Length: 320
Image (cartoon, rainbow, N blue to C red; front, top):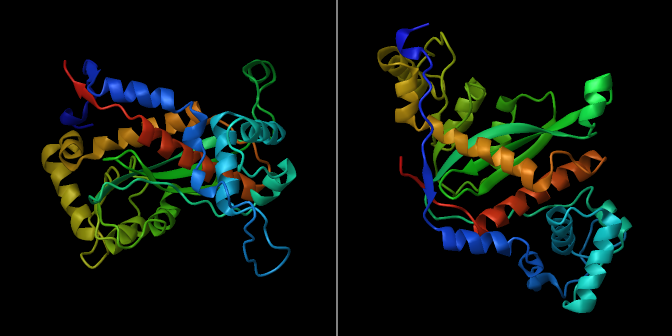
């Protein structure tokens, strides 16, 4: 190990929230039911959406997505969601469409979720990472006493977040065995081609494959991906080779730590914090059992996180 690569433990900094009044009000607003009901879709229950095959849908996708969003925010089973929505219609929203819980379950299997994401108009600084979400939750006592069962499994959630705004710009759910590098091109495809991307950062070399660098090159984005230990230069004709070869030379001259500081690699901690918020605010396991409904549930949770970040996001500065 090189001398400059020894790990040193620096004292943790002290931070202060600059926008506490707005952040405090936003945290209260997250529990306001009216913040999660889009009035523009309240009168769409009589609209019939055209379909190629089968019976036309009575309830629009936007209505189903809104109700499933309420389910995630208030942690409601489908039957309780139906009762909750009926009470809201009696108390305040007379035009609120309330489908049966079986309709919500069926439509969730192939729902086309529109991801709400607020853009700043500036080029995106994407930070990408993945996390596992359990399907069959087991109690801690059972695990300590008998160990994990064979049924224990999970899904991988891949997210691409804009480090400047905290908004999730792309999301995808895959099987637990899918590699992170195989998913990056699909995440970038979810972002409109006319949206400029300044930097794409991944974690610990997982996105340092030729496929990922080729995907970055198609979007003219600067990678912030550390080369693996002992990485050798690529041929110049390889997509992303000039940047990667320059990073290898920079690490050899100044050390990996200095390279991480200069390249903005440490901003990936924002997406790690995002994974923590995903599990804390929306739960660490999926409710749905069908794969299609699970993908819809992940997309709904991502939209909930985006709206929560738009309502309340602290602006912290280091003071010591």
